[in-house]
Amino acid sequence: MTKKSVVFLLLVATMALLIAPVAAQAPVTITWFVGLGTGTNDQQIEAENQVVADFNASHPDINLEINIAPSFETAVDTISTLIAAGTPPDIVGPVGVGGSNRYEWLDLKPLIDASGYDLSGFDADLLKLYETTNGGYSAIPFAIFPTIMYFSRDLFDEAGLNYPPQAFGEMYVMPDGSEVEWNYNTVAEIAKILTVDANGNDASMGEFDPDNIVQFGLNFQWARLRLMWSDFQPETSYYNWDTGQVSLPDSWREATHWLWNGLWTDHFIPTRSYAVSDAFGAGSDNVFQTGKIAMAIVPLWYTCCIGDSVGNFEWDFAVVPKSLDGEYHVAMDADTFRITEGSAHPEEAFTVITYLLDEAVPVLAPTYGAFPARANYQQDWIDSKSAQYDWDVNWQVAVDSIPYVNPAAAHHESNLPNWSQVYDREYALQTLMEGDTGATMDVDAELDTFVADVQQITEQQ
Image (cartoon, rainbow, N blue to C red; front, side, top):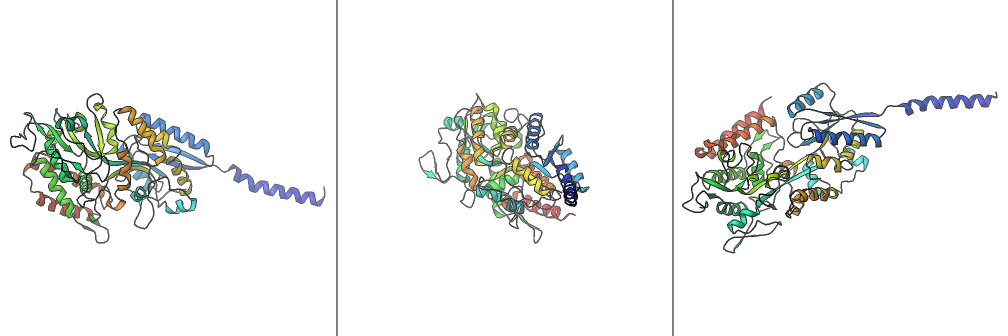
């Protein structure tokens, strides 16, 4: 064998030794944790497993594994333990804004920039929902649920009232033919006309009996108090991260008085006793589905929960009323997927995220009941809902609401220290106001006590 041949064979052998480990290198494992939001029923698990299989088949360099918690409570304990042990999952979701407040998430902006990821498929205003204070992105939108006004066509027709506006900027035509702004003052006026007692008197009449109401004009279906406050006026001054100061914006105080008047003075909003009565919520508080509520302000996801309306009454969508500042603001619930700050493989995790936000949407969105954030997937959702509610609902209202979404800093579940405990304190105030105790409560005094309590909660270590 010549000297050249020996050298050549040695080079070939050396190259083979260098290449072999690369060729044999195992794919990077990315873990996807499910349970902090939806995604845990049998049908959803089947869809999620399909997504995992499809992803792995098309990405040989990444092995996607899924970890599904059996319940929300279990999920919180499990992920908290994993993070504390330094072994967090790479991806968590779907998870809403509130559910994400317990943990730290990776800023996606560097990954978006490095990969050239195209955000043009999302409404620019929608992206603000996940903007961080340093100009980054905590997430990219997946499922969105803008707040809508649902209204009963049947009850408006019966009362001889014009339907609420279905386009932003439209005026409302009152019974006397006058045109007025579509705001909460207007809502209160028509809600009184649509609130009726057993004798047929409405809440605008002197003979009206508030102890024997058979139909209400308005409710904020299943809304927690901060969502209702944000419907009236989104604010960013609830908690100051620089000073640690809690304050109740004047607009939220005004909104609380408006709600209290609707419950206890004008009686067009059902109290808790009415809402859980056999005649209305039957313990579930799902009062709009009974057909005895004329208007409900609630996010789009409520289409999941009004199947009993089919064959009983027809509802439709209207735009939300203008907020107290005279402008339109849309509170929005939103679910998406996030990368944990401690992920060992952020680049590969981002590859999975981009798949979940695009190719996986047709599989995941229907089982999650999710209105896709990507415009090119929205029509399929609309078509499926139109088949379920086949009386020409104006779904365009939902699409048109997207540009009015409240930004991250003004979101009704924006973070503050000890968020979960603050959330509970907000609900305690709401329960006081809506329960029988609300009739005699001193609104301003209770709000002052609330602010002091929340201040104390945020200062707890």
